[in-house]
Length: 154
Length: 249
Image 1 (cartoon, helix red, strand yellow):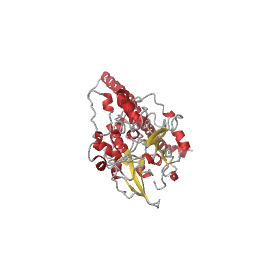
Image 2 (cartoon, rainbow over the protein chains, first blue to last red):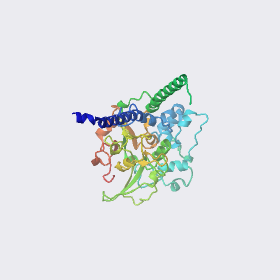
Image 3 (spheres, rainbow over the protein chains, first blue to last red):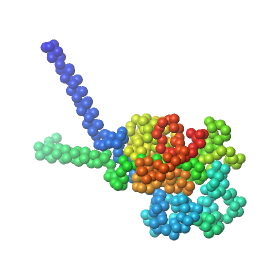
Image 4 (cartoon, rainbow over the protein chains, first blue to last red):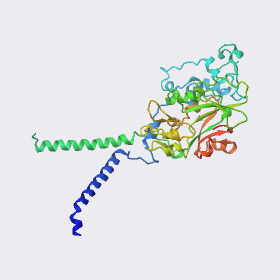
């Protein structure tokens, strides 16, 4: 027993070193790991807040219809009832926030309409398609069709 | 160097006070800012998407809307459209997706045959392989069922990009982190639909909340033929395709 205790100094040094190591690990862990890590799973819950903080660019048709009720009423009767405003007019959240200074550009019907209605063998057969050159001879679509109610006021 | 006892005590007390202040501030930094929209209860939703290929016209509105809404770099896609041309051999369809369908599709199958468009995006799997392989907990399934990437934790190791069986992930060249569809998490948590669903002119894709008993998805799933992509992978995919052709992978 005396033999063992005589050399215990080495043992104490190792134990102290280990204790310091464990202590340093615990302190470092406390500092580095976010306080609520693992609240919902193996991830940082604040990431959800970061992602939700992204800005919205498409306001959604409900916001448009609150002001542009005439257009919404026309559209709801026609073939384009299911097409949301920003599908054609583009993202306009900036306009909904500041309607006076952010003025949306009117889309060019010759380009816009063809995106959907240009004939393509892969499109569903029931979807109305035209070859623009044959159909209108290059005239802009809104010469005959009202985009909000395409078959209404022809 | 001579320093009085008073000076020593003052300086050391400053040091201690400042350190504790920094610790408190650091805790706030780590905890993040308060919730963006506090009325949203994550436990009451389970998001997915319903896709009807028979309505997709390949216009590319979804791809462009996603790019604008989420600042997706050109040449990379969080959602894209594939065109299939299938003969008798279901195992070997011809598939193309020029620029992800961003600019529409040239009419190349004039002879007809079986040809159709398939919109694709992250399937927001409930047992996602990409989440399982992330070594740092940067990719996760949120409590409302959306697979997300924590940009601050992502190392850019690309393991998740390899693991995704659907090819839905890419390395964002600007941020050097994994990037993918967030199902417009910033929109759906505010009661809006996703940018792609908002822009889709034919309702070929519809956002679905599987925990909302009033969502029409329940009636739809009960009464229609619905398939997920690669069901044999058992990923718990939540992008449901109506009447999916057997050639689609």
